[in-house]
Image (spheres, rainbow, N blue to C red):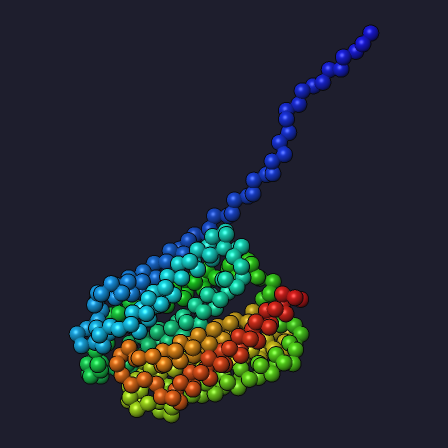
Length: 334
């Protein structure tokens, strides 16, 4: 007798991989910061687009800006593109695919944005404060100046920049903590190699010189300034000079602390070096480049001495950036 085996049928098994879990929904605070950062770009982008289209909104009669020219057109186009990059940066910081972005593609624009916006975050509120206290230039002084832009343009633009800076910082810090948090945890650790220490010492020396010059200008000094720039001194411009001095000192101090190592918590020397180096490098380069072209206000350009000072400021930021880069590489290798 033969026996036929009876097999219990089984449902076919699926070997498809399980779907990847969906990324967590953004927190309400991050959604608010995203909306604020995007909205803050609108006034500047709208003004630049209008000017490139031939509009004269915000430009008073008699302003040199009405004369136009290739340099002014290119400058408007470049600065419009720079601010438009903020939109892309916000997307990288808030979307799941942003965590897969190559590090250099994110850190370079964030470093640049930090550098350009930090002196504005320090200087613009300070200018508003001194005006509120009655120390700003009076209406007579404002009326005596050559017409350039309506006063409301500066308020709108720099308020937008201030909001952008705060919102981007609020988005970048959690992103960086999630992606690179290990590199700013714990103590500084071992001293960096001696060549890096030499670079840090040079950065600190340059920072002291730059800060001394900016503070000299802030308190009414005229060394290195053209006659026209010296006569244009105001408390508002002094506030900006103080902001640049603070950034230079932060760059030098941060570079020294990172190079010497030790038991200090790593996050605040790293923050000093990042913010200070970015601001000193970016604004030194920005002012040097601007000084080499025609002046938008039609006035006398910076003197050769001032151009050397801007170059020194840029060099200080570059040296501090080199120390910062070496430190981050060492943390990655450790």
